[in-house]
Amino acid sequence: MRLTVLLAPLLLGIAPQEDLDRRVDDFAAKIAPGDDGVAAKLKEALKTRPGKIVLRDRAEKAAETLRRIAERDAVPDYFKARFEEKDGVFRLRAGQEDYRKRLLGEAAAAKADLDRIRPVVAEVAESMVSEPEINARLKAYLSHPATLESIYHKDLRRQTRPDIYVLLRKMGEVFAQGEDGRFFVPEAGRDKARLYAKVGETVSRTTADSAAWLKTFFEGVAPFDELHKRLKADAGDPLFSGILLQKALQNLDPNDVDSALRKYEERAAELKAKLPEVFMDTPQGKILSENAAGEVQEKLGDLDRARSKARLLREPARELVSRLRDGDELNDSFRKAFGSDAVLALLDVDVGGEDSDALAIVTARIKQALRKRDDGKYEVIPEVAEELGRELKDPVQNQAKEDRFLRVISMYGEKMDDPALKAVFTSWHGRHEVERVAKETLASKNPDGLAWWIDRHFEKGADGYRLRPASRPEIEAIVAETEKLRKEAGKNELKD
Image (cartoon, rainbow, N blue to C red; front, side, top):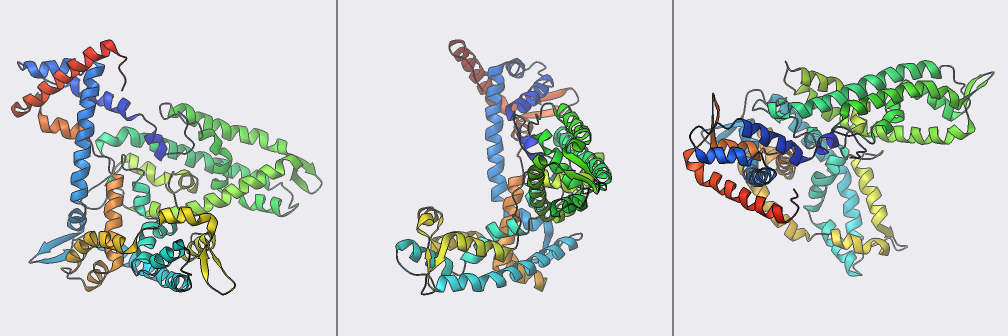
């Protein structure tokens, strides 16, 4: 299995059916049928490939049910976790003071961004021509009062100011959040969490060690030109070492992490051995060979991009680390790993590029899609008209759809006893904030359909799992489906 990035895809690379089959085997081994023939038949059925396939289907359907329930309860759960209701008034729960501070700070930052962007977008919208139709559609879209808020909160904010949910969306199988707002590694996720922690620890330690060596090595490099001067300045940055070593993780096999990490450390040792070969000695000091200069320049470009990404992810990583529960060695490992720019730059998350300023991004997008005519009017560039037409939504219909959801947020906001929070939750920003966090929280969750199915149909006792009497029809159906699938497998090749 070929993977080109680290950490998040590491978990995604583990075949879900393989992990589920292991858990099914564990469950089957713990079934205590006693005198119940139906439970005994299930225990035997789950030892077969057809039985595993049938139960896996049940688990996937259960997970889908859990997702629908979570989506239905997302908004009430958001407020329940942060506020308590008494006499029809919502008050902030004890211990949520940091949340309040973050929310008000985010609202102020969003308003500042929007205040800068709004005049630019308004000027473009007012100056758009009406022909051909794509221009009229874009003019209507940009002129609608809800458009800019929607674009900002659904796209620009994530690109320019990523938050903790950007990380949690990729790490939902590792961390769970308690009612106190702090994160912990649940028992079911500890094996995968150890993979994350092991890779993060190795990358952090190895890049730091390599950076110390490189700094010493480059002290002997001559300040021959701007390239050499920059090499001397950047040599001691662990992120630079990460850029030089990252190829070792491009073929990372999640089923053999230890081997991949050994290769990573071996590449660090190889770097120390071979780096001197690309330099020539001169009376002023070492300088790069002509053939190596181009590749080094490319690596420095990679470093610039990695620095931009790491800079954007430091704050969400810091917040996540600050909210990890104490007393867990795995959490301690994550604290160290997320303190490394080399680790942050390798995370598979999509954030802004080198220029992560919201206004700069909007200005660049305008230039990509529009051109200004000699008469000062804007028109869509013909080459992008078709693609732009597919992306444009009807602003009226779009707002009506959003309003049905966002009006619910204002119902909570109107009942806030805190004037500052009331102002946020009855504004466009507050409503988008709840929608964003609720959706990101859902995206970061990985419903455990198998555990839910087992709990629904079995009671766990000292001797193992015992079938609930009311669930006999469900188990009989599974046994029958397994037998049917087994017979079909005799005629055709059975595949997952």
